[in-house]
Length: 374
Ligand SMILES: Cc1ncc(C[n+]2csc(CCOP(=O)(O)OP(=O)(O)O)c2C)c(N)n1
Ligand SMILES: [Mg+2]
Image 1 (tube, helix red, strand yellow):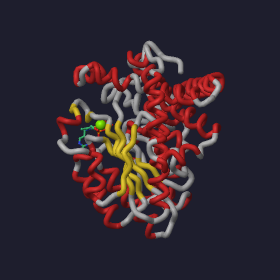
Image 2 (image 1 turned 90 degrees about the vertical axis):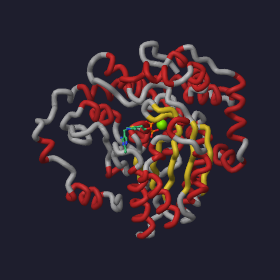
Image 3 (image 1 turned 135 degrees about the horizontal axis):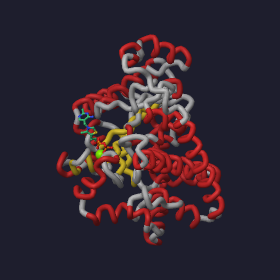
Image 4 (image 1 turned 90 degrees about the horizontal axis):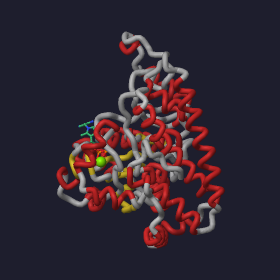
């Protein structure tokens, strides 16, 4: 993909495919015959569609960074380097019946579940026509099965466990999913939710997204154990994944989702990846000081978009096909940002926040139109 000198991490600017890593990419998929079978079932069109979602997710970050640099907004929370986790997991769901509760880091889940890119940009502008009507940049859409990201880390675990309990009680073949950062795993809510889901055999997939940092605290500073060993501790079936390999994540998540739909109880993915920037755009320099440069180098060589491109080309996809998807997505993203900017002066008056909160009525309306979210 095109690289953006003003916005990309330096490791991506000088990126070129390392043949050993491209070979290892394929080996990772082949290492688990069950995952390999799922991945082999993907058509060329489905692979290109995964590529489109990876690009949308990356270019949404680039669009937000451009807004920060040009003074449109003051900061943005990005998922650069972690796109494979969001795209691989959401792709394994059925957007018209499943429910997700993403972290702000999983913005890709929003467009993959059907929210518009313009709405995603409008969320950051806090306009009265944004999905939260200007109240919050954590945006969701219950009609599309997206619970807005919850600022209080770890609590989405208990929320999706409740959603999955409703699905189970109503005998519906629906799955709930949430992502739990390595930092969020340290919260009480996370433990309570995992335990309840396990003991109740609920159809919920927990994606433990280990990007090795919580704000400015490194993984080894906030936890001593091995996250890959956690699900078993709760009696939850789990898969370990390479988060920078979208196909590995997709293959494992399909197995996890199938298990949930078959009524066999919850599942977890423990996914290793790396945050290629700051917690948000304001602390990118601090993030560089938090980790040794070699770690950025290591993960930078494993750019989930670049590696997927190289893998696809290696198995016969024409480079022109990838370029044409990229041209389409770039155009679509620019148009969405422009559309959102046209709403820029629609800022609700401050007192609106007092009257325009979500009411029980809002939730019920959502429930009536799209049965059983909560
Ligand atoms: C309960 C709670 N404690 C603290 C915070 C402040 N906070 C926001 S994000 C964050 C770190 C999250 O780290 P992690 O769960 O690893 O997710 P990541 O940002 O790395 O994706 C913290 C401590 C919060 N939002 N909620
Ligand atoms: Mg983290």
